[in-house]
Image (cartoon, rainbow, N blue to C red; front, side, top):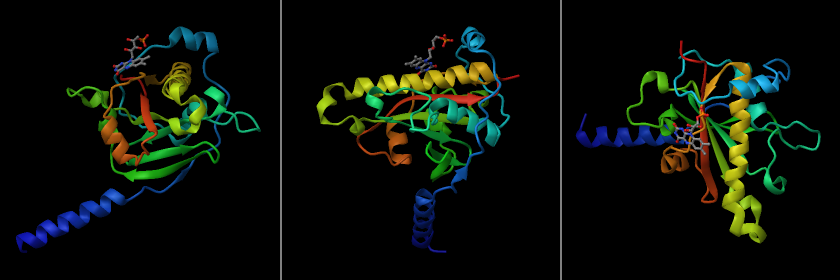
Length: 214
Ligand SMILES: Cc1cc2nc3c(=O)[nH]c(=O)nc-3n(C[C@H](O)[C@H](O)[C@H](O)COP(=O)(O)O)c2cc1C
């Protein structure tokens, strides 16, 4: 095989892989029962940066995403409040198989990019296997949803809205026995490219989620 042909094939294969999307995943109905009482979840809430390698089930992921920012009323409003009810925060889900966008209206994971992109939120260069969570949630605010009238405060509103979604995740994890930590450290440029974000979509925070390390 000529060197030119080898380079050409490498280019073709990597281009095809880059553009590939994983299949959409229809999540099961969220289980809105169970977990600890709210005061006990608050008492147990803490940041945890190490995770067991045990995978979350589809039901776990369904419950987690609904708690984070799912629809909880017939008019389409969410478990997390948002400034002006603009619902600007999207949750991207990173697993070992791919990156997905949580579509709250259909309670579905929409495939965005194949491959394991969890390294984009791994935090520290000295990342250890126990620091790699089964699931990484990236909270992305689309500032364009706020419109021109409040453009001077759009970033503030987007950051606050993401913080509230993150706290829903923190409390869900405390209440259901999962580990998590809210983090600002992440590879923003890498995420924008991999998740195909618009200029107005800003990754604000991420929450890795997994079972506690044994
Ligand atoms: C906005 C925000 C950004 C944070 N960013 C990071 C981060 O990049 N890396 C990290 O390890 N922890 C991060 N944390 C977690 C804090 O370090 C942690 O909440 C704090 O040390 C208090 O510990 P506790 O959560 O157990 O109460 C962040 C927390 C918040 C609220």
